[in-house]
Length: 163
Image 1 (cartoon, rainbow, N blue to C red):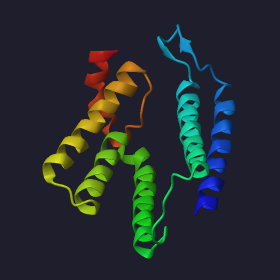
Image 2 (image 1 turned 90 degrees about the vertical axis):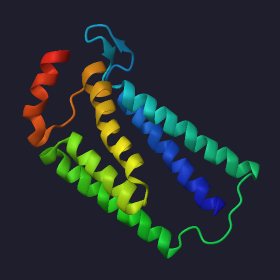
Image 3 (image 1 turned 135 degrees about the vertical axis):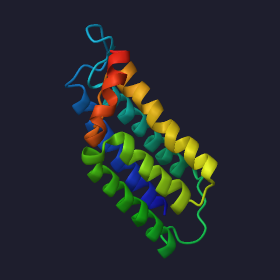
Image 4 (image 1 turned 120 degrees about the vertical axis):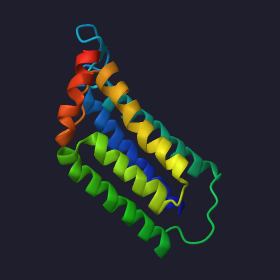
């Protein structure tokens, strides 16, 4: 297992370094013209965080602070990972048609309530609160438009209020 940890951590670090290098094609600093970060800021800094996390895994594997018990990939775990991966692919596939603000809450309801067996209160709070947060964070604050799909007409009054 330690060999797998080390190989995967090294691969993620290499991939992160490539993403960081590729993100510098666009400006990664603050863009005074748009009043927000440059186009490469989020890819660069998210890749840097991913690099740091993978480096932490690599360092931890050499420090001897990892303990494994049992099989890492048992059939139940593989089935759960595959189920969530398929649900994410479906969510991404319908995002351009339904829009991010419908597809993401549908995924969250499925993931929290049906797959995770959480209560309706938590499911409702996260499924409603997340799209609201995403709208204000990306569209209002950063002025990055997310796909709306069929719901585009419903956002015209919000655009009039915030832009």
